[in-house]
Image (tube, rainbow, N blue to C red; front, side, top):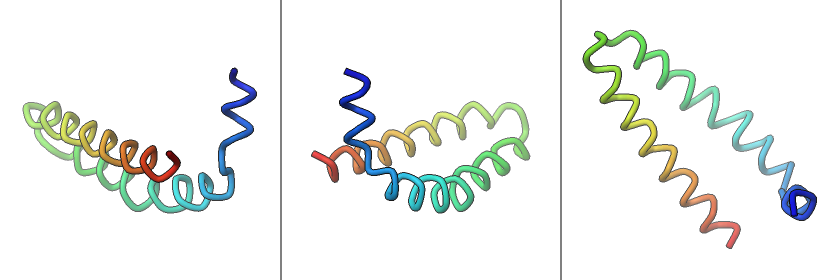
Length: 65
Protein backbone atom coordinates (compact mmCIF):
# COMPACT_ATOMS: atom_id res chain seq x y z
CA UNK A 1 0.00 0.00 0.00
CA UNK A 2 2.76 2.49 0.89
CA UNK A 3 4.70 1.53 -2.24
CA UNK A 4 1.65 2.30 -4.37
CA UNK A 5 1.25 5.72 -2.78
CA UNK A 6 4.93 6.62 -3.08
CA UNK A 7 5.04 5.51 -6.71
CA UNK A 8 2.12 7.84 -7.57
CA UNK A 9 3.74 10.96 -6.09
CA UNK A 10 4.84 13.58 -8.60
CA UNK A 11 8.22 14.26 -7.00
CA UNK A 12 9.11 17.09 -9.38
CA UNK A 13 5.92 18.97 -8.48
CA UNK A 14 6.44 18.21 -4.78
CA UNK A 15 9.95 19.64 -4.70
CA UNK A 16 9.27 22.59 -7.01
CA UNK A 17 6.08 23.72 -5.27
CA UNK A 18 6.16 22.51 -1.67
CA UNK A 19 9.86 22.62 -0.89
CA UNK A 20 10.94 25.59 -3.00
CA UNK A 21 7.84 27.83 -2.85
CA UNK A 22 5.40 27.01 -0.05
CA UNK A 23 7.86 26.54 2.78
CA UNK A 24 10.11 29.59 2.28
CA UNK A 25 7.42 32.00 1.06
CA UNK A 26 4.49 31.02 3.30
CA UNK A 27 5.27 28.74 6.24
CA UNK A 28 8.52 30.28 7.48
CA UNK A 29 7.18 33.87 7.42
CA UNK A 30 3.85 32.74 8.88
CA UNK A 31 5.49 30.97 11.80
CA UNK A 32 7.92 33.86 12.32
CA UNK A 33 5.01 36.26 12.65
CA UNK A 34 3.17 33.81 14.90
CA UNK A 35 6.03 33.56 17.37
CA UNK A 36 6.57 37.33 17.39
CA UNK A 37 3.01 37.81 18.67
CA UNK A 38 2.11 37.95 22.35
CA UNK A 39 1.44 34.52 23.86
CA UNK A 40 -2.33 34.95 24.04
CA UNK A 41 -2.58 35.39 20.25
CA UNK A 42 -0.27 32.55 19.24
CA UNK A 43 -2.90 29.84 19.64
CA UNK A 44 -5.40 31.80 17.55
CA UNK A 45 -2.91 32.42 14.74
CA UNK A 46 -1.69 28.81 14.88
CA UNK A 47 -5.27 27.62 14.46
CA UNK A 48 -5.69 29.90 11.47
CA UNK A 49 -2.51 28.45 9.99
CA UNK A 50 -3.94 24.96 10.43
CA UNK A 51 -7.00 26.08 8.46
CA UNK A 52 -4.66 27.42 5.76
CA UNK A 53 -2.90 24.05 5.67
CA UNK A 54 -6.27 22.32 5.28
CA UNK A 55 -7.14 24.58 2.36
CA UNK A 56 -3.78 23.94 0.69
CA UNK A 57 -4.17 20.19 1.14
CA UNK A 58 -7.78 20.28 -0.15
CA UNK A 59 -6.74 22.10 -3.31
CA UNK A 60 -3.76 19.82 -3.85
CA UNK A 61 -5.99 16.74 -3.41
CA UNK A 62 -8.55 18.17 -5.80
CA UNK A 63 -5.79 18.76 -8.35
CA UNK A 64 -4.60 15.13 -8.14
CA UNK A 65 -8.04 13.49 -8.04
